Length: 165
Image (cartoon, rainbow, N blue to C red; front, top):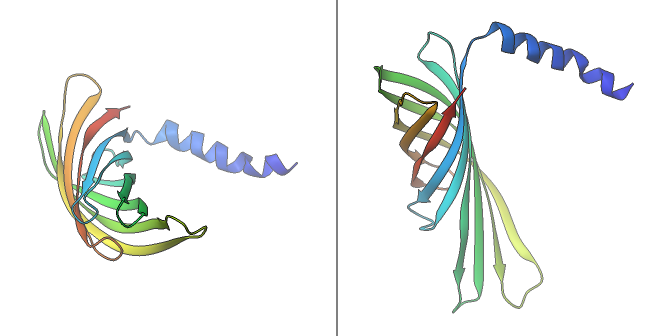
């Protein structure tokens, strides 16, 4: 019986998928943060409202661990982003967009010789923009730059490929 409580949500989701002809893109690529100075990977999902210039973007940035062998310190970071997106200019092969929204940064630090590691979560806001190159296939190369304040206080560059459904 507990599983039946999700049935209305699932039915509403199927109804939305059939009636809302939105443009959905998912993908990922490489990321780099100017303050953390380590590359990483990102995953991203976009939901573009049909025949409108507005959309919603959700992304996760994972940075490779940063280690200082002299001090015995290791740091890891993960950033979650939820943004609103507006397409300023669009033609048959190129989209130029701006975005802004919320950022959640989680990071942890481990010092060699100690059992415990410290971790923290910080909240911030991000603003930026990017371009998407529209190919004949469903693949969409993209690049974007954003500034995130709060926990990161840095510029983040994402370069990757999205798949358009």
